[in-house]
Length: 77
Image (cartoon, rainbow, N blue to C red; front, top):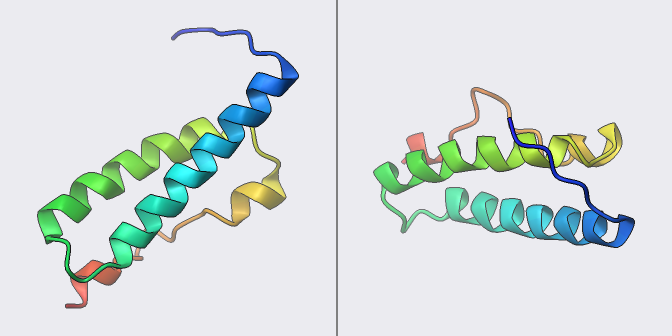
């Protein structure tokens, strides 16, 4: 485990970066032009980024980015 101290401004910036990264990954997961194997990798990365975001975000903000374990729109094609 690694511990890092951030200022309030740095926490807000990290929060913003993580949200934008998750938004991009969600768009990619819904893009039918992207190969399934790539989407599996994106999904795995999303879980890591989400756990990082969970350390900073309020439960209300975090709820916006929760994905159901059964959600895999890319399996439907």
